[in-house]
Length: 189
Ligand code: HEM
Image 1: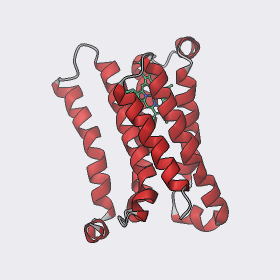
Image 2: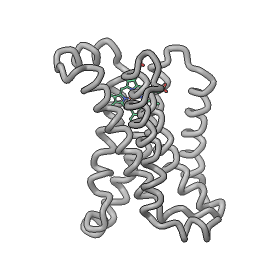
Image 3: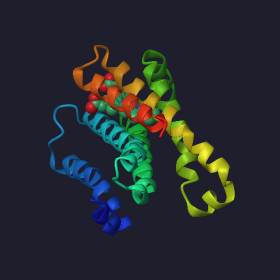
């Protein structure tokens, strides 16, 4: 497994990670998004973003189990940011039509959107410093900054559960997965 992960070139993780986006673009042009395509786009992008966020969170605990995907953590984190940012843009552009008044009213009507925005805002400095120059320049501060991953994922999951109103089994499983991964991460060696 580790040999395979090590042999996997960085670009192939990007290629695989961008496939759900390519599939979504395909569905936009050739149909298959149902009666409310905007909602469907919004939901799909949010869910894919969550997959990558949780995938990124799983890398450290997996390493303790002997599976080393550390090399691909940056790509997975950036893919998470990309999908969550597109999810936000789908809401702002496709759903709200870039009408700021309407967006403001929607935020007040659905407070869980604030949790999502806060989660995305926490991911922004992580994405901006995910390059070798920033890692070198920030040194220890870079590691501290990357602790923001945990509140960002928790906010994302809270936003997801809250928008459901009645939380489904799937929702509880996502919460359990995130809490479990965070606990594993901080479990003493
Ligand atoms: C860490 C950040 C975020 C994560 C992980 C996230 C994830 C999700 C997920 C998984 C869903 C449900 C998808 C489904 O049911 O299949 C969702 C729904 C939604 N999210 Fe986010 N999201 C985030 C940030 C945002 C932001 C910044 C906005 C825009 C203000 C936003 C707006 C929405 C909307 C409008 C819905 C649909 C709600 C509905 O249908 O009633 N999200 N999000």
